[in-house]
Amino acid sequence: MCRQLIDAAEWDLHGGWALGDRTEWSNRACGIAAVRMILLAYGRQAPTVTELLKLAVKHEVFTPQGAVHTRLADLAASFGVPGRAEPVAADELVGRLGDAPVIISITEQFPDDGRTGGHLVIARGYHDAPDPTILIRDPSGWGQTHERVPLSRVQASYSGRAITFAPLSPVRTLS
Image (cartoon, rainbow, N blue to C red; front, side, top):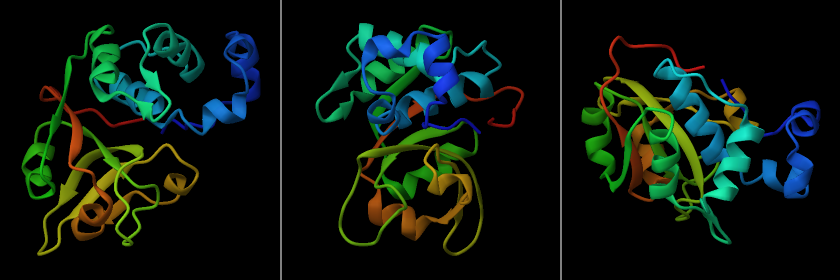
């Protein structure tokens, strides 16, 4: 599991201080942490979150509203894992998860209050049921203790935007 909270020693070692405040960037690094987990899942050498963040800033991945999904997909592709930012309906997620992980845009902690998007997590698989359980990797602090979410709860906070990837072969565990 990769966290979006950037370790102070990693930040200093890789020159993160040149980007500004570590805590502020940690609060915005969910997409970067998700890309790092994808790279590891596909067996690629993955830079640290700080190193990926520096590349993301250089390639203008971020806007004031957050990370641009197409640019996150481009960042993954630059390490040999092509991805595609596209709309994926919530009821299509289970079908997509049979072959590959998907980065999805949800609201942190999956609230059921009408808010959607703003936080990126990896949907990495599912358990079939009337309300399928989606297996997630969430780089936030909340996500360190939550790795299963019913599809109905995902649907309530999911923006419908995702970054999809080619099938994993062979299937690897997401770090």
